Length: 270
Image 1 (cartoon, helix red, strand yellow):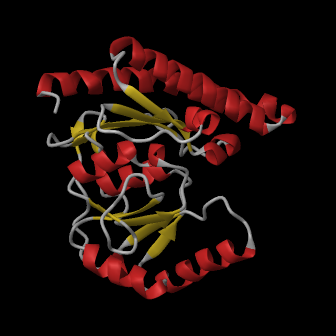
Image 2 (cartoon, rainbow, N blue to C red):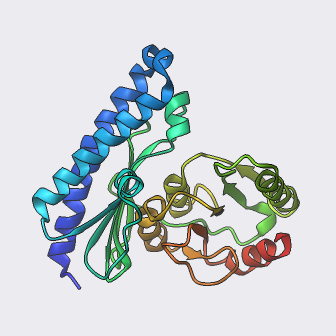
């Protein structure tokens, strides 16, 4: 396991990379109105790739022996296995649909696992200028100020965030809306923010009380947010109630007071 000063260096370099990538996103976000006719996809992939290249180059320069898993690279080179080596897991632009629409919930997500355990997390939303950071065992922060999860202990007063996912076949849409339908009777209200990483940060700072997502892109959506949410006092688990697995594409999170009731509610709707 790395020592404290090493881990703090890992965080500082990751924050640097996130801020530089954030600038690229901010520019693309505000200029995209002119580019829309070319097709939004081009813009997203260009911004995505530029950010990922920048982040990986920056990290590799500082930590040449570390391993890397990224949304774009994994898509291009087949899935990368998560090993015990220090591994940077990066989503250069989480919330691409939001990005295309100029909806300000977009972020850079940079996580580091050591021994497969999420150890450093940086999630940066350059549009709203919010930088979430966390180091395992050292707390979580928003723009340098400590954050903690909500103290809500009643499901019926809780704010829930989920996502519809990308699949639009009838089976997936129906099971998604059926879950939402049943959960809406149990919670105060529901949001879909469009960014898994920012959802976990929302849990961390007490903005939301519950979140779950099934079938998201990959570990890059949760690697950084997992550290931040846990360090803020949150709990992560599989929506079935089993242990959270960073490679499973399934996640649920809440404050500890709501965990059992939330798992119960999720079990009832499956």
